[in-house]
Figure 1: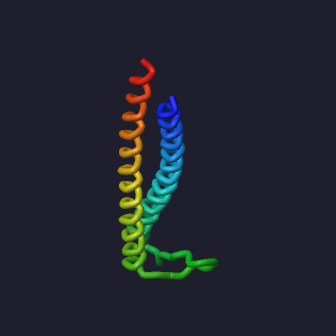
Figure 2: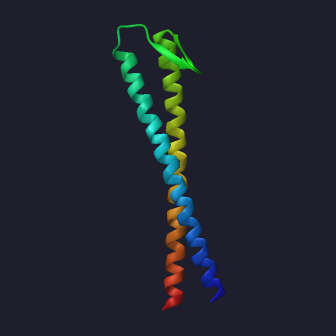
Length: 106
């Protein structure tokens, strides 16, 4: 019975970790959407674009802003993919534990 309790606790920890990963993923997806919208606006505007740095807005070249936004986009994409890999590993581990627990209950 001790082993089964340990597995149940481990399963609960996996669920907590999974919830935290989902929150992180949502945060990064939100930032990615903002990034993509900003990139779209920079591409479509005819006016001088500005970038907010601290408490001020600074005029910048379009190409430089695009470069910064694309770099940030790559980082966000990588972070989201890393989180998705972690999610998949957690799901697989949780499924294995659930099978073991159910098998022991029978």
